[in-house]
Image (cartoon, rainbow, N blue to C red; front, side):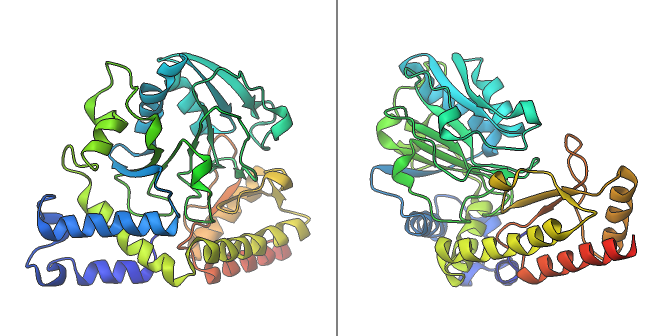
Length: 347
């Protein structure tokens, strides 16, 4: 979901961006007017996320899935080994991709309980000689979220933040690499934001494709080839909107309050059950179910008629999933909470 003011501004500028006579979709990525858009967007993201000078912001095509390969291509060569925490679908896919390029140690897994929890620090089995430690901070399918930053000593942290980036402040200095597909909290699909400690670049595997090389992308300022221009422009508009919400600190309060609205209703219910352990609940993706598959189907059918869309849970979990990313208004969550209460009262 995108904020309405962002969509309205994009619509107003669609055919003629600030008197240029062109749509942003039509511009050369090397033109003065587009380079200004690019530089402004990058500067906004650095400011809002307080990215230190030790790190660089990259805009790379292929979404987060492409980073499943880019990370090991660039980083695993130091020792030939890496640690992965598997707490959901996407961290599992990242781990399988990395196995092509080196020795992978499963430092933690929540598969034994269908990914309903997040292993805590004392449960992490760190190998010590890993080139990096990889985890996914929010698990969309299972509705779990890491409530702490893993401590890995001198081993660089790599985090897939695709589904909760910009929802709360992050100490970027703790990470070697942060990457995120933008289509949850940042912009329309089409680009991955990569924030990398520059000291980690330049040691990629010799067979690394140029467009997956962090060093190449740093040296070319993400413009080795034509970047996803319109998506980057839209990200800039979303970052402007985020400023009006109080930045990441303001958004953390808003998103926590929104999630609490829904979780409080589920906790009070005798019919609805939250799927994730309370200690690991995601503020972005609320997964829940009723006491039967038939009631789940009825709930989804009635909800759809009332305008609640995409509530059906993933096939691995079943039940329902309410994705309440940054742009979802509090009013929408309140209405869903009210419908949960009404459905239970009627059934």
